[in-house]
Image (tube, rainbow, N blue to C red; front, side, top):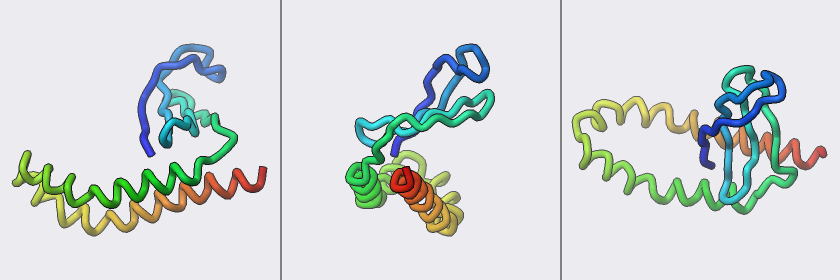
Length: 109
């Protein structure tokens, strides 16, 4: 899952504001106005396959990404690693719950 910031017109604020866009693969899932917080669900179809692929790809490349971090900034990485190791399961669970929430809302529709 990728989150990017884009400037779009917000019908709630009646002006151009920065929005956080959540994408999975080529699917745009949600837009959220950073000014008023209005969240708009864009995609009517939750791409389960893409969510799963994205999750597995990030899981499999994590060791490589940590190794690259260690090469770039060993001191900073080593200092942050204990905290990250403790909080990662919680962050991972939150992401899975968010994804399941998207799936649950899709099935109810």
